Image (cartoon, helix red, strand yellow):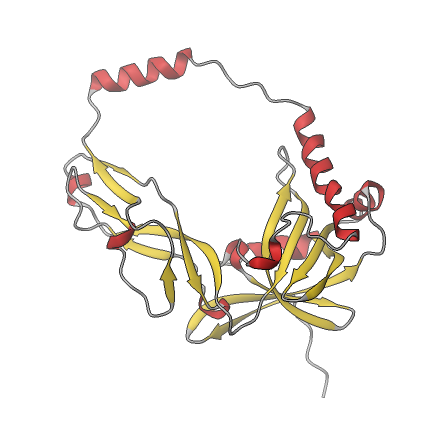
Length: 258
């Protein structure tokens, strides 16, 4: 019988909650600095560091395509990563990503080790569901808050939190405190923060004034050096990694999140 084929990602159900878990093969990095980091990127790999949970920080590289596919699961950057280094597997979450400000590609990643039975703090997106009567009457739906900070076991991280707006009339609002309580996670966000509200419809005069203000605004200048500065910031963490410190967050051992 042929051995099972290794697959780069798989889905699991942990503690009854849907959660994507992706296995990524990593290679240990023995060199630090700008030169080795650039060569790794040119070869299609992302320099990274794996730390936390009492382990010594490990400088690694991961395949850029595999990492991109991992983040394209429904869990996004909250996806559980089963990182394999030298035959050893470590469960981790993405703590920090440094991206090219122009291309958006990942320049460096920080992964923090987690345990399945220890709660973590993460931010998850909020989706507005239902039909607001205020919107049906011409009101404008606004969503000032798009993500919710929660404390949850790694296997119970929800892909999103649905917020029902079917009771919102014009002038009404929903706050974090109005979100239903869950047995799987604790909400950490400010309970008084506004999640959604239905504002009065904009008059024709107000609309014309807004358009005039936009037309008069001068476009912001984009500095060409921004991309190089971001890359240097990512590579500057290589020396910190060699010294046993995470590149993206000096206090990364205290918690995990995306």
